[in-house]
Length: 117
Image 1: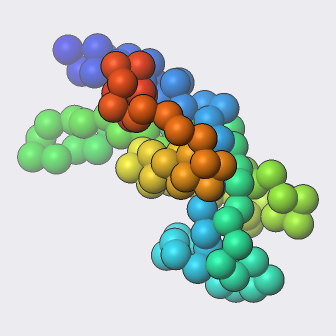
Image 2: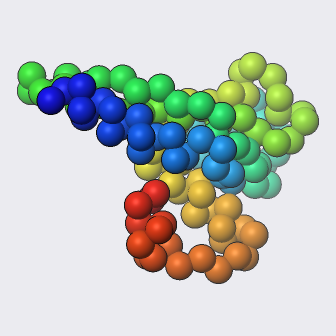
């Protein structure tokens, strides 16, 4: 049964690989000012390049959790220390921020988006 949970976590995580995201370093605790001193409140766009599923043991129940790697599109933010590992809820927030930023109207409550988000 545990293997099935891990398999389903991989299937769900694969949907996010290649997704575009946007974040503002000033609004995100995980984006330290020391790495982005010249960015300020500008939005950075990036792409989810890969994921890793780990099993978190809570109350003797193994729960598979996915962590996603984000790389930025901006050429000044291409160093190794600009690569971040984020959780799924942060990733979803980044997708929603990008949709607001690009002013594209998507119905995030539609069945197709509900499966991804």
